[in-house]
Structure formats: C-alpha cells, structure tokens
Image (cartoon, rainbow, N blue to C red; front, side, top):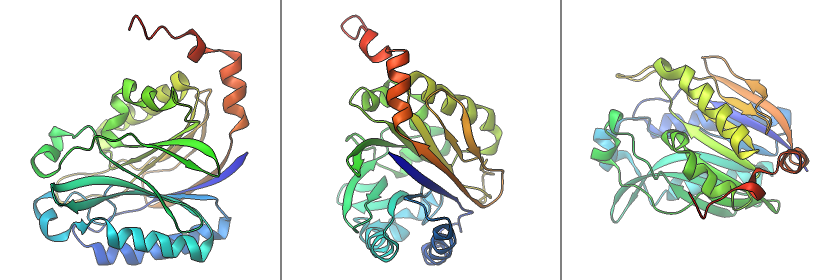
Length: 260
C-alpha cells in the first residue's frame, strides 16, 4: 500500500488562531495540487507557544479545529494527521494531536504524554495518558508529539502493537536540530517503521524553530527533508517495505521483554 504524504512546515502566527486557520486553508489548497493521501500539520499550529494566554485562546474541546479538518477532509477527500492544538477541557489545557480520515470522521486524539519543562509546558499544560495508535485505510499508525521522540520506550509501545509508520508533529527549536535528525533516524531504524516528522518553521518571541521536516524509511534512509523555511514537503511511502525489513531482521520476534 502506497501513501502520498504532504507535511505542511508552516510558520505559525504567535497567539493568533484566526490567522493560522486562514494560512492552513491556503496551504491545504496548495498541497492538494500534489494529490496527497495524508496531510500532516505541526505541533500547536493554531496558537504557537503562547502558553501564558492558552486559557483565553485554546480551542474548547478542540471542537473548532476538528470541524476545520472535517470540512477540509470532505472537500478534498484527504486524511489529516492534524498536528496538535491547545485543547481546553474540564481539567485544563492539553496539547492534543487530531486524526481525521478522508471521510471527515474524527478517528483519534492523542494528548502529549511527555511535557517539556525547558519550555515551561508543565506550568500551562496537562499531560495526556492515552496512546497514539490509530488506523487509516486499515493500516496501523502512531502519532506522537515533539519531545516524545526522546523516549524510545514510548515509541516502541506503539510499534510493538503493529504501527507501520510513526507520525511526529513538532515545534522543535533550531539549536537542537542535530538531535532532531539523529533521534528521528534512530526511531525509524530501531522500530523498522517509516517516520513522518512535521516541524514548524520561523520563530516566536522566545524561540527560533528548526524546520527540517523529514520523511524517513524503515532502513533509516531519508526520503525527503525540508529546509529551514516554510514549505510543503512531499514524498510517497510504500508500506510493504516495512514488512520486508521486519522479515529481514526480525527484531520484534527477538525481543526479550520478560527481562527488560
């Protein structure tokens, strides 16, 4: 099964959801010229890291963003790994990844498990608890958010359940670009899975972001990589390659979780 992927490496207007929704509409329209099957957004794309104002600007129940993706999915018949949004619920604000299929159905939500204290996430966000496993066209995938990729045991919790591709949505800062690349390649190799990583570009009042969204195959080869500025990164992935690699080196059969 082949999927065409488009990662929208967008520069995010700090604390301005309306402007970001308008930009997202333009970028989706532009991306559809390449006939993708899945469009991927970055982390916190509606607000950026305007954490101190999240109580005021977060999307209640992620409802507006879910509706945005449902309408776009129906219009274009495309799946969305909809990045993550500041999701205002009864227990506070979570950083929530949204999956919408090409029929306009909300398939899954995953809220960021590992909060990044260096950017004060723990002061303004509540951690999630659910896994990021979901299916599109009957294929098992996983979605994680930014800092999650530093926890290989969390990624393995998904691939050990069959996930063939790991979607990573991020606002990864430029000073740690080398970590971004190395971690993503390592996660692909050790999990024998595709890694589709959509980062943001640009800057906010406190940070410069790395861009360099990447699509990596299960052998650790980089299929496509963006630069530092806003762009749409596109490539096709062939999921049969996952099965081939997992047969060639059967790491999932050779695991010894009883002793770990």
